[in-house]
Structure formats: structure tokens, C-alpha cells
View (cartoon, helix red, strand yellow):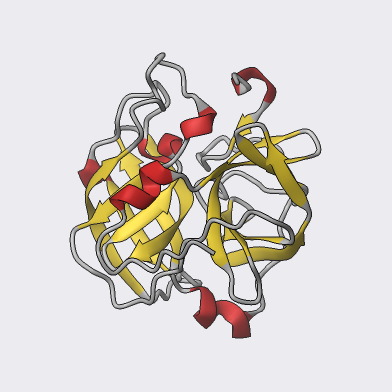
Length: 228
């Protein structure tokens, strides 16, 4: 499925694309979602931000296009930095990026295949933040938690998103903006588990790459994955 011409990839840069807003997460709820953070990029003549989520003490889940430049070339790991629970200059923990991996299918044909738009980022050190569990039961309601270009310093979220599988992706009805890309989509509330990663905005909703075996096989020992 090639949808690149019909969608808006959601990496926040100096030239954001138009989209809608997610509402601000209440401040009292921020401590529960400290595993969600900003993956910041500062490359040559370019700064950007994606959302991402800690799935093990030193492992972060995000989108493949969040670790690639505008020409789809791999970003240098030293240009990437993860900040967990960022809130107006405060944060739960932070670390530089040591390395990252994307599925071989993501750029097998040069252009991004959004069905494989996921990445696992290894941090330079473990963080003192409880990771979010990863699940496999894909059913609404879905939750979206992350940062976007209209609210870069505070988490935004929805916990009532309708949605369903759409071929190899999940299509949910909640709006997203640049910066939300790479952020977690969760299901199974109130015990929310990550079931996918935001890849793009399309007319009438958001496209999500489901967590697949490529991701599960690479989770380090101790990562809170469940099959529920």
C-alpha cells in the first residue's frame, strides 16, 4: 500500500503541515505518562521533534521517518536525544541515542513504506522511568499520547478514539498534528498497552503502524510485553 501522496507525515520541523489539535493532558495525569517523551533531532541546518515511548529502560519506540532526514537518509545517532516526560522545561529523565534500527522493508524501495514505519531506538543509558507495556489486542477505544507543534512543552492526549484495522494499518478517528508522529497508540484501557505507532494524518483520521513481530523480537529482556 503506497499512500505517501495522500497523507501528511507528522515530523514537526520549522515548516509544520496543517492538521488539528489534540487537547492538553491534565497536569495531574502527567506522572502516569512519563514514559512518553520527545525524540529531538538537531542535524545540519535542521531541527525537529517526534513523539516516542519508552518500552524498556534503554529502548524507545517511534516511527522510522523520525530517524531519517528529509532525503530519507539515516540520521546520525549523535544528532538524536530522548527526553522522557517533558513538561515545560522539566522532565523525568533523558539520554542521548546510542543507535537505532528500522525494519529492512521500511526503505527497501527508497521511498518510505508506511506499513513498516517503525523504529527502535537504543539509548546511551537506561532511564529511571517505568516503561509502557506493549500489547497485541487491537480494539477500540484507542488512546493517543504525545507532543505536537502547537503544544511542544506539554503532553496532549485522547482516550476515546474510535478505529479499526485498515489493511496492514490501523485507522483511528482522533486528530493529530506534526510532532505526534512516532508517538504511541494504546488500547485496553484502563490498563493501557501500546499497540501501534503514529505514522501519518489522512483525511478523516490518523494512520497507525501496528506493533508487529519485528518489534517484539527486538524488545530487550525485561521489556513489559504481553500478548493480551
